[in-house]
Image (cartoon, rainbow, N blue to C red):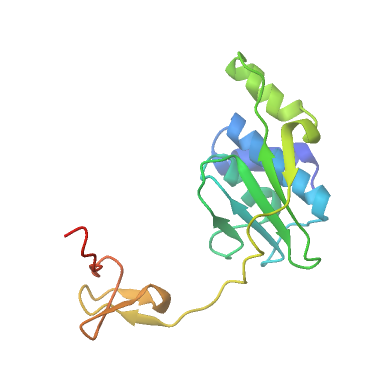
Length: 178
């Protein structure tokens, strides 16, 4: 089933809860990446997005491209930038899209229209990705934290005095910040 952009936009609004400029940025970035990298909706990890922010825009990426934290194909490299690196695992191609500055002095309504209507090339700067394509998500064994008793993935377990501890219970050793 193919969906036109208006139907897809409506699904983004429904998922996110409201229509806003941030959602429009993510929507446009996802559609642009889709065209640049020949991407489809990712039912597994064929498409990967590394978002540099945790704003409204990321919700649109989830809806348009099928990237999600749970599947392991939506990752965060927090820089506070409206920037996204998209990867096509099938072709090995990738692109980093950075939202350009919008003109100054716009009202909220004008900004929203700007993000919805400005041509892709003017809205986003295209750069090479800085981060190599992330590996596919791994499955980890789980252990019970020997302090709080909560089940914890092995990659988050720390050992202190021979005991397996979760991050919450583990106190790191730092001689400079006692």
